[in-house]
Amino acid sequence: MKHSAASVMCFHNHPSGDASPSHQDITVTKRLKKAGDLLGIPLIDHIIIGHNSFTSLKQEGYF
Image 1 (cartoon, rainbow, N blue to C red):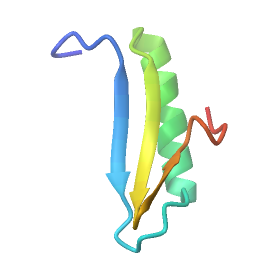
Image 2: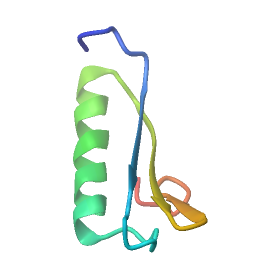
Image 3: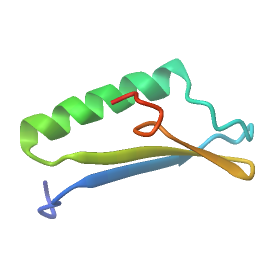
Image 4: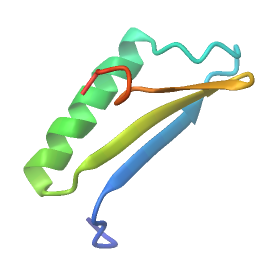
């Protein structure tokens, strides 16, 4: 909002190397999606980066 974002993408890593989403990752993603919808700033994706892999929560159907 501060910088008039048209949309948002979130990224974070899992130091364990396992890019599988945790329960907390899924919960935060749903909250970000809901907040973005309310503000008119769509969440494009939430990507978890692991060791030589990544997971797209959008592609996995979490939102």
